[in-house]
Image 1 (cartoon, rainbow, N blue to C red):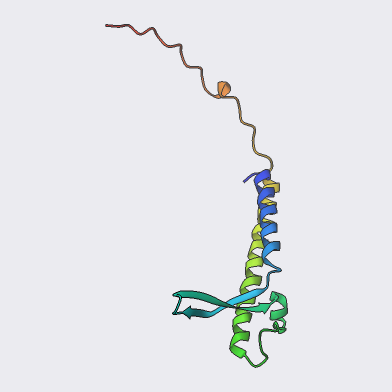
Image 2 (image 1 turned 120 degrees about the vertical axis):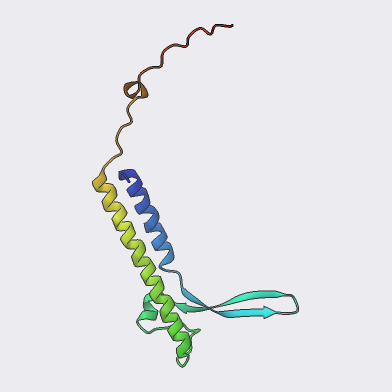
Length: 126
């Protein structure tokens, strides 16, 4: 990886981390089955923001006595924070490697690297 690739990767990973972090944390609660129409829908519970959940402040949709829901929200929030931390480490590593590696080497002209081919011979018909 050279400088340009490292910087582009840094920008993309930064944008991805900044896009993921502020989204509300959700977890899959179960499935809703409608037998009359033959549909299965996934039911998600919205918990709130990741750092708020880890500090003990759950969203309005989580009752204070719903300990199982709170534990599921805490797991989802930990996963979100860990994912953003991993993206941040990869982000910083790509920037550092890209900057230390420097620019890509110049490509030499093909005539300087390879000898020219001999001219084609006259084909003799037999």
